Length: 159
Image (cartoon, rainbow, N blue to C red; front, side):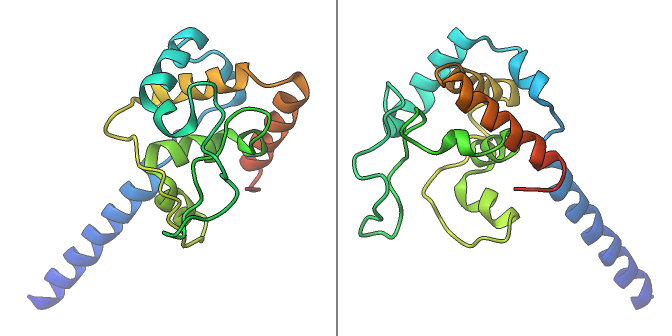
């Protein structure tokens, strides 16, 4: 009888683990980002409503964003050409926004709380993709090409 409960407990645990690991980042491609249901203008509006209070209305980030504060966290970085957002693939940008910084980094084996909150309960996947699409629309062609290469590298197992 106890063996049955142990087996059921293990099966339930594996089911939960499978759910957690499969729900994290949806499968999408560069084309999905470029043709997101949310257009650039709506992505801009969502960005202003959800992101600008920390990252700036003009994507400029917080002052001294490269220097840790007293709490050990870095201020919110810019999403324009001055920042490093374009150095990351779509998968990381999406999971960082959806799950929050600490959870997204933990998925990659990094223990650090960046202070970035989860927007999983506030923004739909399409809205997150729309915001990413808006940010990308402000970058130079070279930045977009570099970022697209990083996205492709993620698909092949890179970070």
